Length: 107
Image (cartoon, rainbow, N blue to C red; front, side):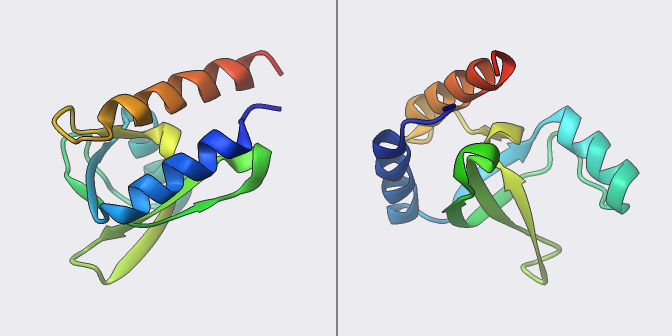
């Protein structure tokens, strides 16, 4: 199993308490969305997490991201987002991302 459910639920609750959270998309997700859905995001484009949900062991923590002035929401895995380093949860979020990516690489 890639995630520790107790730790994931704890992180989700902490994140929900401070929504919205400013993030940036990774280069990989920008490229993937452009090719698959025609959605154009830029790596330096500031986005806001509006909601968070757990999509099971396969999906991990997923974030509802507002784009186009809150007119559209896009669901993106937390592993494809870069949290601003000054955010109080940045270390916990980065730790989750690294642990999840490593766990998925070993499955």
